[in-house]
Length: 298
Image (cartoon, rainbow, N blue to C red; front, side, top):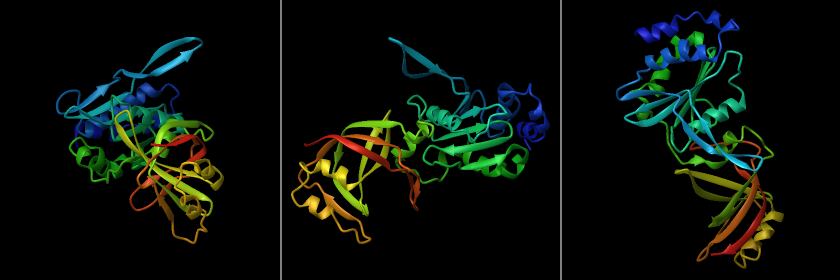
């Protein structure tokens, strides 16, 4: 057992009950030894970067616009590439908190980071997430670290994290927006000039379009669901027989209409969907179209 692993494995976890043991203590007494045990250091190929300054989008206070700077606790790098961010929380903070998860996710997908993994630890529990998936890749109680360390090292270890054999597909737009909005289901999102190449009837009175977009250099795939009344907002730009075909009836197999020879561009006003779906290839959350703000042929 290396020195750093022994340090965190033999830590007296009863200390977490001390009200003076706060977030800074979690960073120094638990997280730092753990990430050093995983093969990272302040210099060399596998590097720890503490509190790097990142530029947050502008915010408005009154009539004035201000820059906000954010500082992830730890950024882990392999050969200069950011691979994971690690955020410390006080023992009193639950890692189920959606705002905490969303904050760590937003650091990982930040345009100056673009790491595929992010982790949270409050001293009691450790969670490792992939930015491709909604649920933790690994989750365990810290006092059971030794039962989980080999698996954690196989994914997050300095020599393994770049070659971890998780299937990497385009990130899902709906899950991305859910993470950034900390679960605020009523939040509205506006997308302009999205192209529609095909429309599916996938369930009775449920239509969907698929789009691909780039946000801060990362590609996201999104699904947008809507009902027949919303479909009618596109009737002036749909091919003449498309609307009749899409009326169904739905008999179990999806009905598809393709825009052959033309592309419809739309403005979309939408909200988060109601749930995350899973199949053998991916997790995804369809967004729900409230209305098409405009539609024209390109």
